[in-house]
Image (cartoon, rainbow, N blue to C red; front, side, top):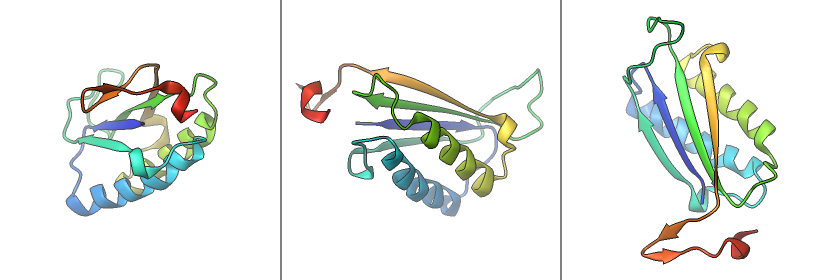
Length: 120
């Protein structure tokens, strides 16, 4: 199950959030075996972010936590698409969009540990 949380230092309207949500749902398919069906998203706008001591320009810090993909297959394509999405929808300059990948080796939902081999 992938989880993408974005933190931006600008407001996100409801309309922009829906557009980003839909586009991220398609972008996650660039990672083999992942789909919007299991995607969890979080948005934090007006977040206090500073880049080089300055917060006057739009900035995005995005964390993509992905389960069972230690080889990082599709990460390059996914990162390019996520950068494009935040640039086009929120007008954040590409040089101010940072993406951190977290590898998830263990996951639990509804009190049950997820068998990693089942999702590979």
